[in-house]
Image (cartoon, rainbow, N blue to C red; front, side, top):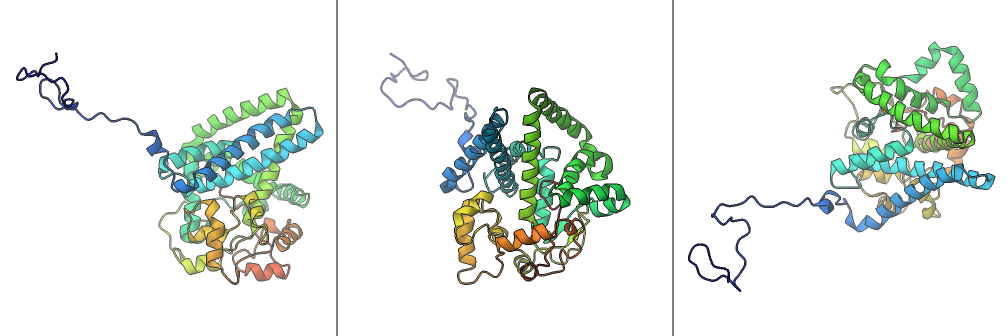
Length: 372
């Protein structure tokens, strides 16, 4: 029968001894178990099923899309391109939500998921931290801060400018391609990116090797992936084109600058527009992960994408002064696709009125994925 080490009295049937006290009477440090659930705690636990659903959709669309690209069927190839492009499109907007810490409570967990999504989208040449910083400046400063002025670059290279204009006329997103290429070149062209040279070379090696294997296995699958990437760039630039009436400023690398409208919520809402895919059928807006409820997003940036329609309805119960029509946007997007390369009226014209009058040019190269 077990005995107490101090007085010899039987301890059988008594309460268990304090596990934090050793037999010699020394207090042990408390045993701490890693709490995985705590680390993965969602910002909005009630929306867990929505988060799980969108992650599942991205995985199925991305993996299934790649599988379909290798099939000997035109129909499956077409489905694969659409699935892959849309899976990356949704991944880009979930990456955007990670930047706002809208998924997890932990900034570190949001960053981890954001890094994974950055690879899926194909913009992993740029760091997630830089993507987040640029986008936070967009929200706080109420401007679109950048570093590299592609417009002046094109003006200095007239041959390239002619190619870009011809490509944009043919619906090839040449400006966006140039911006993504600049992500690779940035550490050698932009002083603030110099420290990222090794990282960029590593990403180029890994991603380039994977794409080379795809090309060797199936040149057609490689070409279809390129097509999916072009569709992704076009869809993202369409969504960005008319969402704001902000001025483009070249001060992303400057921390101490005077920003006239920094933190001005009234200015922010007045110069932000909700470009709904459909006002009559809200479910259609899920095709863009509700990113088109842009005024609601700017009102509460950490709000889950699945709660934006309700906030939008709350903000505009009767009239919707900041809502843009899809048809008008599509018409202007087509009409001004070449003029938009230089987009001199961006930040100087009221978007809703100029769209109605057919004058809205919009702007290119404002993707949150290209952080320079």
